[in-house]
Length: 155
Image (cartoon, rainbow, N blue to C red; front, side):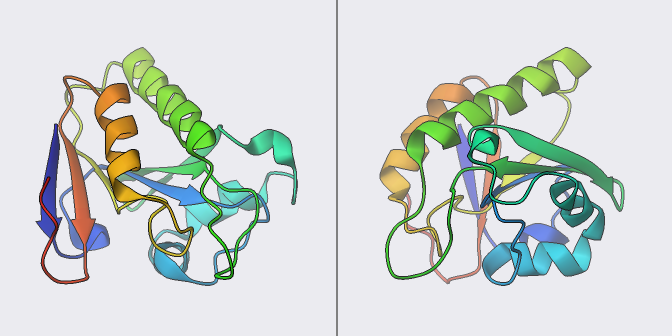
C-alpha cells in the first residue's frame, strides 16, 4: 500500500530511502542533488561503481547515512530533460532486489520505507505505471511516497 505525504522525504522519519539513479554517477539535479548534500555516503556508494556501465540497470548500491539506509536504484541509463529516461523494467528489477535485501536482513516489515515519485520527475516516467510496479513488488508492505509539488494526486 502506498501512503502519500506532502513534504520533504529527506526530513521525514523514514529509516530507508530509495531513489532512482542514472548510470553516469551524476547527481546534479532533482532529489539526487538534495541527496548529494544530505546523504553524501550514498553518492560515494554510487561513485564506487563504473561510470556509464549499462550492467548497473535494475540493480542498486546502498549506504548508511545519518542513521538511514539509502538505496540508489539504477532505473535509468542516461539523464536529461529532452526525452523520458525511466526504464520500467529496470525499476521493477531494482525494487525486487531491494525488497529481497530487506527480507534477507529481516527488516522489511520493521523499517519505514520512503521514496519520491521515483522516476517521474526529471526521468519522465508515468506515475500510474510506477505505482503499479511499486504495489506489485511491495505487496503487503507500506511505502511512503513524498512530494513537494503541492497537492498529491490520490489514486
